[in-house]
Image (tube, rainbow over all chains, first blue to last red; front, side, top):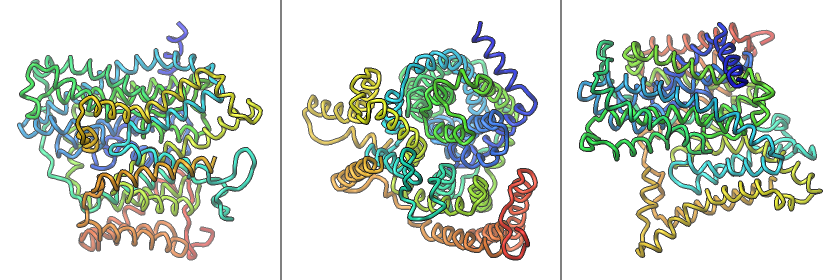
Length: 508
Length: 113
């Protein structure tokens, strides 16, 4: 009953005219950003975050979450129509979606993607509403040692969203932590790494870094890379046949559940979920020969999964304060910027905010479905714009945004510097998401460690008396070392040298 | 904390080095050399715009940047590039200065900035 009350409170909040309007603005802007190749969900949220700084926190977060959803829908459109995924979570969609479009079935592919996303969103929001309080009440007993262990686990989880190399991901997480140490030491008040520069006293702002690493670097990497000519669709093509629907509904249900639970795991996220869902559908399908040539369930499954994973990723973000993906890491930073500390207490202290946000997810999904079914062809016309005209404007937005965070040119310099760093990181395959995660979790981790050591009278031995903390550390160690051990064991069992498995991972 | 982080950074950095040496060819160095020069140009022009900001103001500097990128790097026409630069700066002014009331630096020619 109490849960029902809170859900009602949530919808009440989300349906207020102001919040509804910003949710709408968020999903539309998100769709447009998602459409543009190279600008993914993390970039979209980072780019538009400065616009929300003057809003009420609930409204701002509702708009940012809307952007997050919108990018997923938009990214699907460019995946299907120009075979260029707008976001890494829709890479898989290009496989079947573009083939379908080439066969003149772009309309049904887009329609099934929108419907799958909506239905999976519905499933996963129900799961989110039931699971979040459970998670939170479980985490209420957590003291500083457990929180510290949890953050270490979150950082270890970055391996999940680093594409190519584990070591690169871990190195980038450490780089993020190192950036977080700049500024005044929270326990002693000593200046660290400021080199006498007043601007550095407050530390390096996360938003400026994110704008640099994601937005500026993405734009730079895409300079001179033109988009393809999109395949045309018309409104009346956007209808599904009974046959399409029959083939897709199982895929949607499976993708939705799989996506949600993968999304909950720290670090796994939407990209992984979509790949898994595609694989599952290919294995289960009775028309396996159609896969690779345009099988509609190969669009429905992954699209359901990536949308459900977005919701799943909010469970650890809201209840533990540990982001489940790169984009939720940026959103977590947004929470902190508005002075809200996500964690087990958030549900009790700010029920209106949390439930309003969750309810807005549902409304956002509904808006996107209503917008996308009729308007996908219209959105697609944005793809005809030349990138050469577009990216100077995106750059302008990046730097005005970086200035607006704290009203100082310093932010512009930081964004520029990290744009250059991010460009080279991208070029040589160093993932950016772990840097952001390290930068955001760094101060929190440091605080938790400090409190732990004072609980133990200056001694970290207290960790040994906390079973939950020890278990979490063990899981973190397993996440880091486990795959290496598994590979080693596999090599021993197979009894042959070479690293076919390792190469496979690099390819992905 | 800084010490521990430094240690971690050195450790994982070392791992990356070892992997790179062991694996022979690095995994990320997929050539993008054709775009290399224009990317350098974009970075250089951006740097110029940031340096010009204290003198001529934020929006004029970045409007010029948009214009220069469109005209010289992307080879658009003079009119299109000029419209894009002016339009972009005007839109940014409308959203940030009018709507969000964030004062952008005006430069030495605008009293009070």
